[in-house]
Image 1 (cartoon, each protein chain N blue to C red):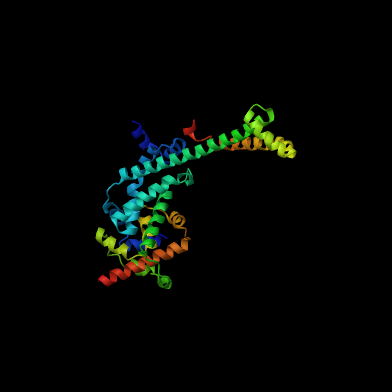
Image 2: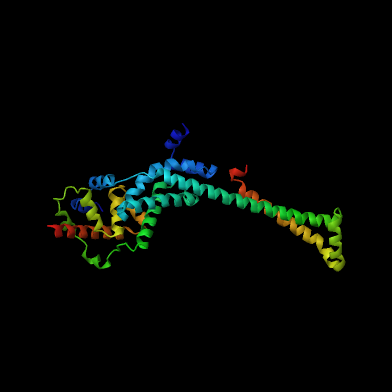
Length: 128
Length: 187
């Protein structure tokens, strides 16, 4: 390959000439504009992360609400939900038997979801 | 003070800090370091100041948004120049301005003796160099700039362009032939 360098050099393409050519290229720095665009992209990215976090929070809130509904249904702490559950139970005795299973499944889903969320967000400093 | 300190830090250190904090300010010294570095390559390929500026700015933005794809402890400037290379070729394809290699020239590469007989060309000025580069297809132009401006070795160029050594050798041979034809035409 050194032969190639010699050939190119003989045809005027030596290191000095090409470096001089590179240095003579007209150049105006666009650093400020580039940084503005990067900062803008950074803000948009942060906005998307916040939406992502909001999605998680709503998911958890919804899951907790479902959980509370099941717990209330079992303990009878909420009159409204008990009445509602009672209507459902009166419609199907089988559904009552399956409430415990559903409750367990929902709890397991929430636990796994929280585990995944903690794992996902553990390096995201803006949540600290 | 913090700014001065940032400017002394390595590319990888700045990138690690950006990933940890999300502060895009850590990118500023990187932009300062490699703006001109990348611009020379883009300008050589595109022959247009404004297109080259656009490509460099777009490439910085791409590098910033895809920084998690960068492998720490490899060379950021080579990774970034690859983005500039791809963006430049995308623009050339979009503008239908790309000059492809002519495969028919394969069997007619220049012999070393023929090229070495041109020992009278000592140096080319900016205009002559630009004119000579314009004669070369874009792949050859890129290889010439990488070899002689950035002073990369052949192995690095092959990895960068994703071609085997034989192909690079053949391309540079053909570049020599084109240049010789150019000079002969001028005589």
